Amino acid sequence: MIAADTSTWVAYLEGAKEDDAELLRRALLDKQAVMVPAVLTELMSEPDLPPEVAASLVDLPLIHITEGYWERAGLLRAKVVAQGRRARLGDALIAQCCIDEEVPLLARDRDFRAFSEAAGIDLLIKY
Image (cartoon, rainbow, N blue to C red; front, side, top):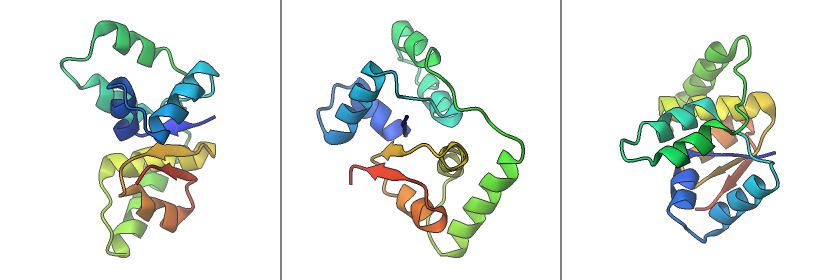
């Protein structure tokens, strides 16, 4: 199983051929992709998202939020911030979901490196 950050989803939906988009494409074909709730929220926030794309995104298995998630996400973000690194709230929520479920994350966003260094998230990053 793998999850993808919004950056990789957007690239995939735009038809990108880079490694991360191809890995996501293969995971979808093999039914090995799971959706992070915060990523789904970001993607569904796009006003021009075609209804058929929205429907296919909603149909993906969703990572479940477990008890203590919000506290763990906050502590993770604090740890990254304490290291003087950038830690956007959405990124912390995405990282914590993947950490909790031990699911590797595909991402183009370099900011996830800080979460990988702080908490050992399995990061498959393009850049």
